[in-house]
Structures are given as structure tokens and as C-alpha cells.
Length: 515
Image 1: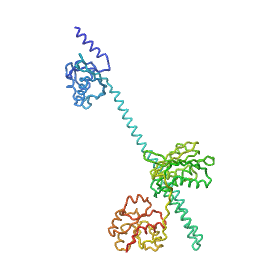
Image 2: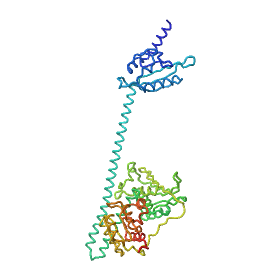
Image 3: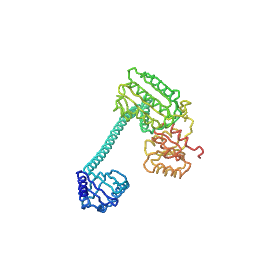
Image 4: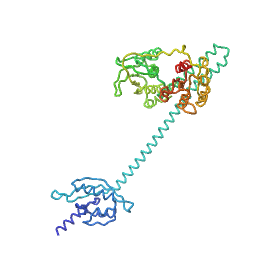
């Protein structure tokens, strides 16, 4: 009678927790005891009515649920206590997939594990809420990503619009000068002095267009570079004198004795320094504040760098302005073109350097430029331009370009030097001409034309005459062209070009031993 009372008390205790599912198994996975909540759960999930002594695993129809339950039971029978969150049941079988927080504990008698007890708390609603929230979070993240892509696309379109508008504005101004001067020159036929003025205006306008194009290439990090050893100290002194002569600002120099030289394009680094000094002068205005330029060597993980720092105590920039200062054609100046800092960034990147800007409204700005260094000895050197007056040009040049005006220009320039000129509008026409015309000394080939790619055209030309020199002329950077064509070409001429540069390149490429 006492044993019956004790069992009734035990079952009453098990059933006293209305939200807790409890059952105990022996080492053969047979029920020792369970509460009414577990009986109801097994009926709900597996549609079975359980009794003591039954093998619980035999009642679980899903293989994955049964195998997972066996693994968990064996862990508990090995003496381990642990807690898991698991799902049971299968909606496809007419049941319901429910989630439980399962606490497993071994049952020990005299130190020996004789069974296990499992305490399950139904967390189905909580789990479903969590899953729904995760789904909502994923949807929100996907939406945020789509919005971010859309915003980035809109920003790119806006930047492209600003870029296109800026280019169109500047080039239209330049073209207005060139076209207007050309009209005036045509009126001054027979008046060489007045005509010379307009021709000079045309040349200066064309030079401005070339400079604008080079600034755009600098912004893209694709401007042509002619590396040489450059002393930053000498270059900065030169730029200070240039800016100081205009009376725009007072500049203090703090040039570190250990600042190394750099291998760079001197003209492009001059452009960087002059842009930074000019911007600093504009920032301080007439306030009387001085600009400070500092240099030093800086050992970084990537190696030794030369550091140039330009600091002003001028008006400073807001975060909004600071975020856009490198956008092409963005400017806060009434007469600014907005290409200066964009080009500066492109030049520094092309030289393998790094640019950092700090600014605060009312407290000024600091620009810091790092350039890869070389041994800190020697000085700046600018190579003299080649004297082409004594260069003997080739006798016969084939010019290949799909632009009729470029063909006509090259023909005029070369004929003025006594060169015989043949022309072709594409690679196919050029090959046909070379098959019948064997006296060509050099081919001057445009890089971008309709028809066969330049590589194929050059290979076909060399199949006709392996010794035929080919000079490419293009608006692209020489490094890119030579990387693409390699030893296939014998020279390069950058568009736009001057007559002397064209003649020098063709003369250098021509083989003096040719008959």
C-alpha cells in the first residue's frame, strides 16, 4: 500500500507542473514514468497512447527524430547532463512540428547510471516567433541591400551627370575659343599679323583641351607618367616661390632632413603640390593666416614613404563637403573647375601613394600625401626634350586612322618634313595597300578603329614584312598600350601630339638599314 501511495505521489509531483513535459527511461529506452503532459504530447505528435514499459524509440516514426533521440538518450546514459532546443513531429504525417527545450539528466542509483530523465518545455510559439522575426530581419536586410544598391546607382548616375556636364561645359568653352578664332583667322587672309594672333589663340585653346583631358586621365589614375628621381624639397621650394610671387599667401616650410626622394613624374607631382597649396591659399583668403608645409620620411608596413603635409588654418570644410571634394567637377569656388583634387587623388593613386584629409569648419584643413620613396640622395632631374631638328624622318609612312581629319592632319605634318604619306581608314585597307606598296618605311597605326583588333592587324603586317616598324598613336596611356601590345610595336605617340614629337617617334622607329 505504501509503494502505491509513493507512486501516486510521484505521478502527482510530475503532473504538478502544467507546462512541463517529463518522462524517465531505463537503459533499454523503456518508460519508467511520465506525466500527463508527455502522454498528451506523444498522442499529439505521433498519435500513440503510451504505457510504462514501452520502448519509446519504437513509437517515433520519423527516422531522423528517432536517431536524434537515441543519440541524446545515449549521451545522458553515459552520465552527461545537457540542454537542447529540438523539433519533433512531421506536418506531412498529419501531426504538428513542435519545438521543445529539452533538459537531459542521468538517473543514478548507488553511483551507477540506471536510466535517464528528460524535462521538456514547449517553446513552439516562442520558436515560431523567433523564426518569423528572423524572416522579417532577412527581408529587411534584403530590402536594405536593394535600397543601398539603388542609392549607389543613383549616386553614380548623379556623379556621371556632374562629370558629363562639367566636361561638356569646359570643352564647349574651349571649342568656342577655337572655333571663334578659326572664324576670325579666315577673315584675316592677307593680314599675317592679325591672323597669327588668332592662330596663337587656337593653339592655346587646343593646349587647354589637352590639359583638361590629362586632368581627367589623372583623376582616373591613367595619365601618362614619365618617372624620374624627384627631390620633394626642391619641388616644394619651386611651388612656394611660384605661389608666393602671386602674393596670395605666406607659406612656412618645415622640411625634414630625412625626407627621401621619390621616383615620380615631376610635372604631375608639381600639379599635386600646386593644387594643395592653391586650395590652402583659397581657404585662408585674406585672413593673414599662414600655410605650413611639412615633409619627412615615414616607415610604414609597405616600406619607406615620403610624407608631405599641407596645413592651413582657414575656413575648413563641413562633413558634407569633405565627402565630395574628390568628385570630378565638384567645387565650392565660384570660378573653380572642380578637377584639381580629383586629379590629385588620381595622380597619387597612380604613383602607388595614399592621400588623407582632415578638416573642421572654422579650424582649417590638413592634407597628407604619402609617396613611395627611394634612397634619400640626389636631387630632382628633368630630362631635356630631344632635339629633333637634326632627326632624319623616314621616307615613306603609312598612316592608318578612321578619322579623316586626323589622316589629313598627319599627311600635312609629315609632308611638310618631306615625307611621302599613304593613308588607310582601317586595318584591312592598310593590309591591302602594303601588299602592293613595298616602299613603306613605318606604319603609324591608331589603336581604336572598327574592324580587326590592332593585335591582329599588326601580326598580319609583320607576316607581310617582319621588319616593318609599327608606331601606335592613341589617347590612351602608353603603359596600357605597351602592356597590351608588348614587343609588337616599335614606338608610341600620345594624342594630341606636336609635329616634332611625331617626327621624332617615327624617325626612332624607322630602321636606318632599310633599302
